Length: 438
Image: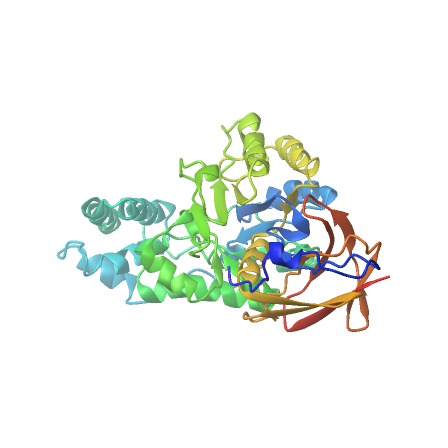
């Protein structure tokens, strides 16, 4: 951590005072989680299916939980639609009759086949992508050849491209704006939900950049902080492009202080010695409620776990759905432990963790007050989530006020094994705080 803090031990030394008032120097730390909680949880949803908003969202709203929704922008009325950028598709189809698929043409062909108008052809794009990402390169080439052979023979009809989305997915940009205004994070899941690892450069960039541009147009740049590349890809080529467009990806978030355990990982998060562990879990249909609650309990047994839950379908709509009743039971279990859990959006927790690792804090102590200076090395127009500061004060100080300039901040005075302290939240920046005994 890049926190310039005077050691706690040295800041709490008692020194001579002629018998009038015990004086104790103070130290300030930034708590690991906002409001000095024990763990973080982010509720995230992929694909933007309708019941996420009509069933899951009202349950979360009733508990004052905010979630992150990764939406497919191309299916929303008013957005730019999916398209293939490149040579005429007919020319590519004709070429496949004499030139086998190989490393020279695979990305172009895998990009184009999904836009030949058929759901069957789109399946060849997806299947080839899955093979490619699992290291079965030769099989991926063969899968693309098979798909184009069916296109040439007429077994799969070539027609004008039509987006393959459910007619029940009717959420509008106006709806998304209202959800964002309520505190939920709306974020990109690309334009058409393709296998980005098998797209050529121009088509990959379109999927990533156009989705971002539509979110800016309808919601504002604030909602382009995080994104999720479809199928949870960790393909290095995709990550390089995507990290150049979005500050944070749920797929990968490389930081020296963060251990990343993806949804398929069998590693127990408590075994990591990193400062933070991002532990992703997928509450699929067959995962028991007992297991899901145990994930929460695991977080509370440690102090460094960020549980990122990845939901898809809700109440029969979408992949691997959970019922509304199950979500209500699960989220209520978290709510009952809210004193120790910080439930917040993926963006908010990401920002807090990065801010905490990129600020310096210094103290100046006198008889009746402590001046605290906090300076951030990040862009505070983006990294603006309040940090929780914990400042130890002399035991003789019955109560204090915390002021930023003339502004009086909310605070709590508490005590732990180390001593008495004051807890308050402060947005990062070049900021000076005065804590004065009253």
